Image (tube, rainbow, N blue to C red; front, side, top):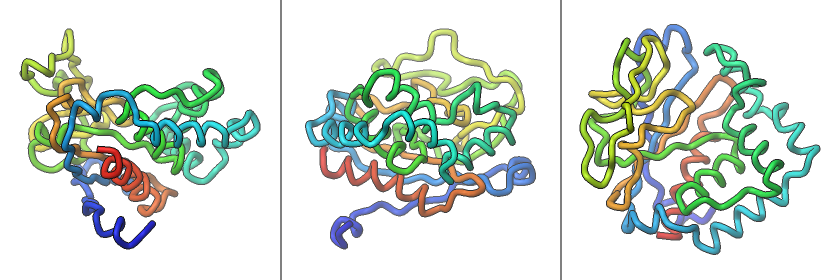
Length: 236
């Protein structure tokens, strides 16, 4: 990575973490960056040729043997351990990287599904660390980690016309690990954010976030965020 490109990188911020979560999971961290987006429509449109080519190149790196061995690599293995810590069986609920590799083997390639989705997939496959995206302008305050309150809604209570609310908005059970801002729950850990806080065609800033778990260095998480940021800067 050139020094000029490195200078353009946004500062990575560590999110806040509820004391209860710190006590139970002291190594869990949320890292985030904000990136300006000049064209939200392009962000959600078809991927550019360079992004498609990068995805195709990654597809060629994975054969059956690689897919089977991926869970033993340090970063995927750390996420498997963390899944068990939070009560998920990684052999039933796949970690993000294992789900991506499973779909690659099922489909015969990493399929392109859109500009932003492809960039997030590239970062995941390159590093083993999943990155999620929010519309930064609907985030109130800093992102962080906490447990949900019984009956708490997921996402915004009301939505702009261009960002319809979820049909039958999800009411969370108490005690679930969630990503939140200063006022509301935005996403259940390792799941997609609520539809009304995801990027839209009018998005002007993205909030990208990723999780650091025990056994994964912050540099690996920062690299995943920077991969998405650099691709955004190059393509939009």
